[in-house]
Figure 1 (cartoon, rainbow, N blue to C red):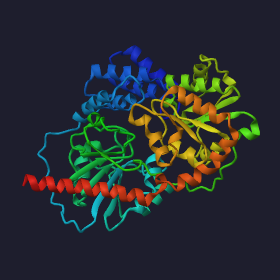
Figure 2 (figure 1 turned 45 degrees about the horizontal axis):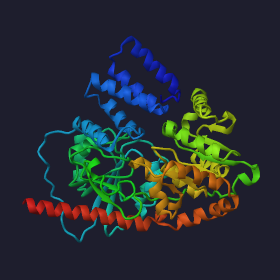
Figure 3 (figure 1 turned 90 degrees about the vertical axis):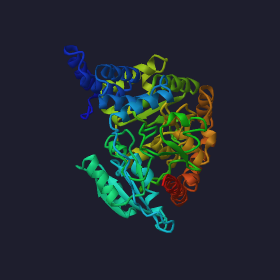
Figure 4 (figure 1 turned 120 degrees about the vertical axis):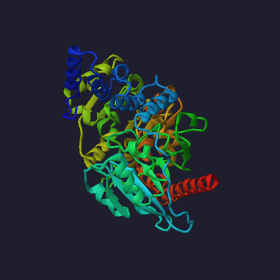
Length: 473
């Protein structure tokens, strides 16, 4: 699958299973491959079959946790149950560690960020405006990287941190000891159950206060993870029971978008030149669910003089592209109306938004980085209010940018909103010209405002821990 030939990889797993149907590792690999190719129900089935054979298969549980977010059939309570099963594999019955961190209110808190995505990755893009904006009178920042990848984004993030440490090659106990030596007060996970995570280290309680934020979109299931940073959109009131962590809501969005460091002008709507409205989505294939195909087909029927442009890294696989076009064809969409393109470097990808009039958000797993990037390029994003965190990130972003009117409450409103924008090129042109300036001036891109809110959260968590430890004593 790392070679990009995902259909071939899935076929290889099936051949292995034909020889040995009870091979848990092959089933887990099959589940991962099926998820990447957008076959979510089959992926869930493969992972569950692997776990029926080996209930302690960590990779199968991890893939099941991730894939569950893509399925409308999996509830929040079920996601918590799966995450807790994964967490139990890594939790130990060790005595609770004792921390002697200085409790003085006058000093800056020592905050540590742990991630394998401190580079050109959504985590890097959303962290970039925050690190340099932190008030050094309130926090000192140490970044702990778990990946060897280094690029221009890494360099900018390093410049925004007070200290930079590598956890590569360190066992969980060794990494925890290093963090305790650094006397970190609040340790923040930026990976969740994604690759390069160090959640088993968090399970050992490496710092007095531990929180998860940004790199994932659900509960970690860990008893030692004290808080999850969110907002009122992604975790509305009443859904706290779906999380093992205490929910701490930030006042605006839980995301802060750093403007890309490229000089790319927002051009006029391409429909004025082509005579045909271009809808677009640059989200990964696994997000293009059966419900999404049906919804976008309805949009294309409602706007008959329109096309759809899809771009993602998976689309350098011809077989996957052919399969995707056939899925649209079942809804009566001519394959010539669907253009599918492979990956591009970020700068070129952003420039490609000048070929899109209106962006369409998928469901139930919507956009995040793609939503912010489309808005920055002047492209309105039509999104459907979702029933889970991953289906509400776009609403969080759009609300922070002052664009709540682009969030549809139901499928009919989504189709009407998308087709209505396609039918009004004058309004679309005005909106396109105004989007970037209004977005940049909004809380979504205000690093200082976001950093103050984040620091307030850290200090609130810290004071709660201090009060708790005094009470215990």
